[in-house]
Image 1 (cartoon, rainbow, N blue to C red):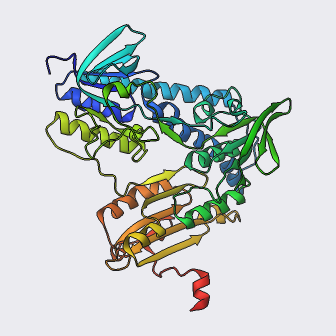
Image 2: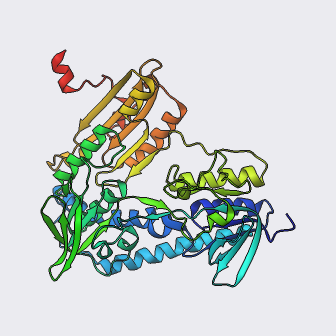
Image 3: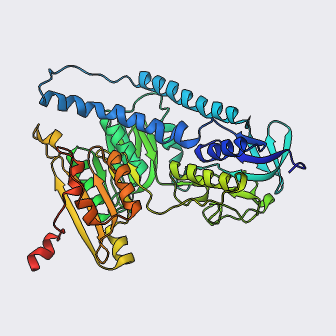
Length: 461
């Protein structure tokens, strides 16, 4: 590798790229990382971390209401958007600094510049009048929000990127989309007191999730007063003195101060010069890789959202780790993409691991469903009608739990532990043999004894 400037050059200092760079550098390899924006990538800078802070902030309004039901004296509470943004920025800067510090401690060089392939081994650092060479190259540029470019007036809308830096908290918001980002931001704005409408062109939110989960969350959002417009989409957006007017296909309109599109993300490959390097991409722009994260060029690899496999930060980290272990530590490793738990920080939360009921029936044929809907202890005390949902999908022949779905408070915390059991292939009998912790929501997962029969089938029996 002495003929090259670096043993490894990483494009993108997000979670996956940083993990790979650190491990490779600690092995003794000469490593550099190029980043055009801030260190930490989407998750740390304008993704899951700041979004979770916003979720926390938005939940306090409901917490204050609950407190009154528990005997706390009513007090006036106000929310300071500027103060929140300032504190958020301080924390994000701290985390970004930790990423940079960890790279330096590992011995990797950090280059603040946009990188572009000149050929398969050479990379131009835009703006620095410098071109470097590397024996191996890792692309970890992540993804970015996409908007419908052909929609008239879309230039007046924002995406999740801008939502983290709004100069003031809007009074009226339209969030467009039905995926987890749209649902989460709709809950955030609603919780912060904005008049919020979640608008989605499909028949129900969270496409791809279990049908019972989708229906249950939609019902809970309705109970909380969040306006959800389904089977609705924009015809155009008009900027007027009264605000942004969302003209809907088929008639009708919604007036708001902000229109936020959360209609999906796309791999960030623009300007990388992949053609010059001979790297193949899929029609949507995703870099095509094999199980070892190797591209069509044997010494060029890609991890994370830019490959559009499983677009989650912990997955990108594992892919980066597997790459570095295989290529620099002599330990051939593949990232395992099966049974990955995930959470939607909606209000209430959704968390799942494994297969939905429909997926399980397709994969295993006969399955048993164990499901419970109940009022959580915390809110039933104050007379609220909130309901949690717990659902286990069990492969009938072997009794293995192949799916776990939770909607309710602290669902994300519960699914992390439930994921261990699903990943380990434990059976329903083993779940049942586990003693419950009482009183908790999680105890429902080990006390579901009778298989669920839909009401329409029960009537026919």
